[in-house]
Length: 133
Image (cartoon, rainbow, N blue to C red; front, top):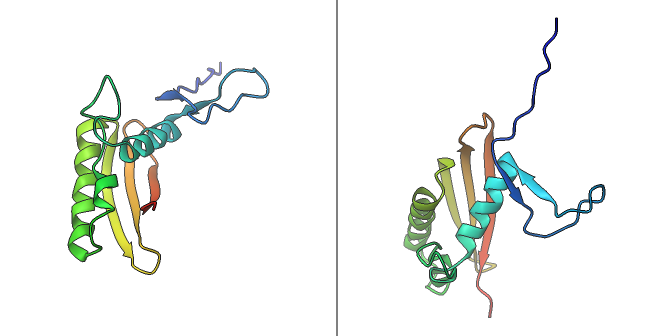
C-alpha cells in the first residue's frame, strides 16, 4: 500500500510586487527560500525608523553609501549586513558575506550565501548598492 507524500511548505508570504495569479485571481505568493529572500531584500533596503510599528528594523546601508569608498568601508558594510540579519531574520543561517567595491561604477556588490532553516539547499542573494544623486 503506497502512502501519499504531502509537500509541506516551510514559509509562505505574499509577493510584494502584488502581481495577480492568472489562475486564481488572487495576489501571488512566495514560498520557502523565495519568501525569505524577499524578506532579506526588504530588511536590507529599509532604513531604521522607516517602519511605523517596528522602528528598530532596518539597516544603515543607505547612510553608508555616502561615505568615501575605502576598503575599510567594505568591512563596515559586511558587519552591518551580518548584524541586521542576525538581529531580525532568525530563519537564516549565514554562510558567507562578500562585499566588493566597484570603484568604476561607484557601487558595492554584495553576495550573501546562506541556508534557510528547514530548507536543505543553499541560497544566495546578490545586491548592488548604488547611491542615487
